[in-house]
Amino acid sequence: MEFRILLSGVFLFIGCFFILVASVGIIRFPDFFSRIHPAGKSDTLGQAFILFGLFVYEGFSFETVKLWMIILFVIIANPTATHAVTKAAYLAGLKPLLVPSEKPFSESDSSKKEHSEASTPNGDPAS
Image (cartoon, rainbow, N blue to C red):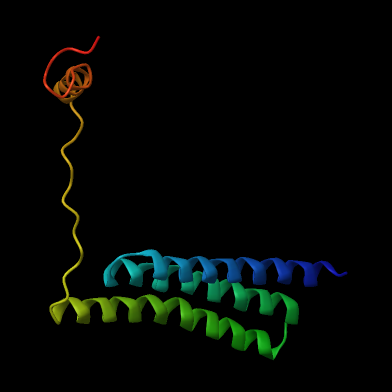
């Protein structure tokens, strides 16, 4: 097997991996704004790797020049479209899901926790 074919297979595999990870991210994240992130970032990287794998497989020809133009278009257009869709959703009134932050762990909290674990529910010390 030629090295060129093996290298193109590696790039195709990496591209498919990134697209698969982006798909899982779209399903797992809770709201629109966090879902659009893997759709914009990982999808773009996966498509670029797949097109680069096709570029390596084809060798240098007129088709590879077209593939480079497609790669450049994808790298520029996908993040731009993601930003435009996100901004339109925000301006339309869709708000991001914000989780209230927990208080940072402090030493006084740990001492209270140790004392509460050492006592029974009625307040008597555990033996």
